[in-house]
Image (tube, rainbow over all chains, first blue to last red; front, side, top):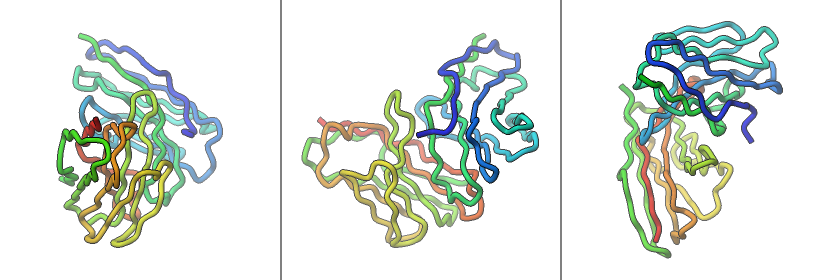
Length: 111
Length: 113
C-alpha cells in the first residue's frame, strides 16, 4: 500500500499557483519524498524530490514540513498543460527505483 | 534525452494467446521495471530487473514472466492472456544511484478479448 494520502482531485485557475498537498505521517528518517505527474495517455514524469529541506527546480517547488509528516508541491504559475495526475511517493534512499505509486491527485487547470 | 520506447501503443489479443511486450531504453540504465495501471488502482509493479538476466517479482507477478537478455531491453510476457490482463502497461528505467528519477515509456494499452 502507498504510504501517502492525497486528495483525489483539485482545480486551479490558469496562471495561479497550484498547491498540491500530501500526507506521509509514517515516513521514516531515510525516506525521501518524490513527486511525479502523469499527463493523459503518457507515462509518468519525474518532477522533484527531497528529504528534509525545501527544494526548487525549473518545474516546481517542494515544501516539506519540519516534522516531515507532510509536504506540498507548488506549481508557481499553472498552465493548461499542467493538467495531470500528480503522485506523491515516499521511498528509502537507494531503493533502486521500485517506487510505490498511489492514486494521486487529479489536477485540473482551468482557463 | 533519455528515451524509453515500447513496441506498441495499442494491442488487441485474444484470450489464451501468448503476448510479448517489449521495452527498450537508450541510456545504459541498469534497472528496468514493468508496471500495469488500472483505473482506481494506480500503478502496480509486476516485475523488475537490476541487471541482465536478473529479475525480481513485484507486487503482482502472477500470470506474467519477463526476460532481460540485453541491458537495453526488458520484455514482459503473458504466457496465456486473459481478459483480466486488459490494462495499460508501463515500462520504466533508472540508473543505479539515481533512484529518484525513473524514466517511463509511453505505455501499451492491451485489450484481451
